[in-house]
Length: 145
Length: 94
Image 1 (cartoon, helix red, strand yellow):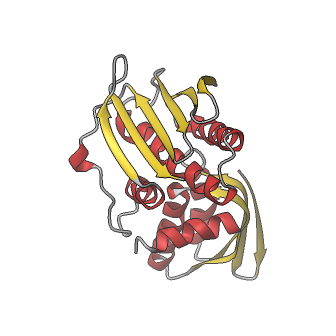
Image 2 (tube, rainbow over the protein chains, first blue to last red; image 1 turned 120 degrees about the vertical axis):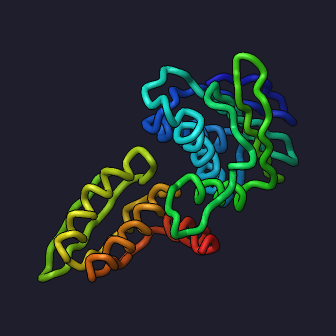
């Protein structure tokens, strides 16, 4: 885990993970550790952990759908000011087609659709950007504090 | 993720423990689906589950659908607070 900026008003932590489902537990552990360090409200922490884990899961499931044995890594950056939390995800997988990012009906039980719904419920904004090199995708989630 | 199965008459109760995510969802399916396929009523005890994401919800929905096809049923018997929160959010999706 690396601390990019650390002062009284702007905190930021970043860590990268191998792109595979077995990394999701590590993503959650990292997130919980950072939220404790940033003193994020305890009631909010597990919701945020869920949103982060769902976004990371989407990278594994969709951006690397055809590459289950990839050695690529994804990065998660959690930044916090007094007013807002910003969580950024970086990956080198298949570019996100924004029009296809939506949740599905409950009878269509593929997790990606429900996961995206969870992210929308928990976070205030979701933005897909092109990542600066070497990254391909950059997802940015924000939550007002 | 750990599990334990108890049998009383035609009811199998599966006690799940730990965190249920994409990485272990198939393990849960491997435990629960054969019980459903054998025609037993399946009770899921999630009291010991500290974390569950959309993959876990999918397992619950699939289990329910599978039970209907097999003319039996799946019931949630005890649910931890973290799981109840996720279930409440998932119900909005209905």
